Length: 132
Image (cartoon, rainbow, N blue to C red; front, side):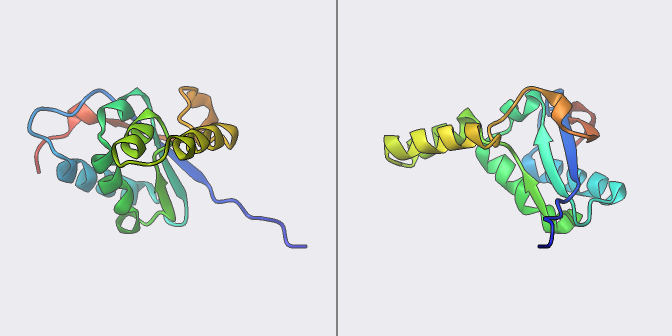
């Protein structure tokens, strides 16, 4: 039996807050540039840190959808209350929402504040970037 080969995971820790006037497009273009330089081809990229709270679900989707541009196999924001809120606002059944939350927590897909689970980290201070 062939063993399952797991990809390397690159953690991108988001700190600080975006400056006034900086939008998701500015952010994703800067993230793309930095991750290309770090060499994330064929790797999984997970965004984490307390400042994930400051990114709306659409902004997270914009960043994740750009993963082919920076070469990663996937870009991932862990499931959290923002996702649950979205499911509620889009009319999903409460039992389905409950199942998503329970499953995500059981499978360790729920956002964790323990930064020690990420091995390789790229620090990304949101306040350092300007409008492009």
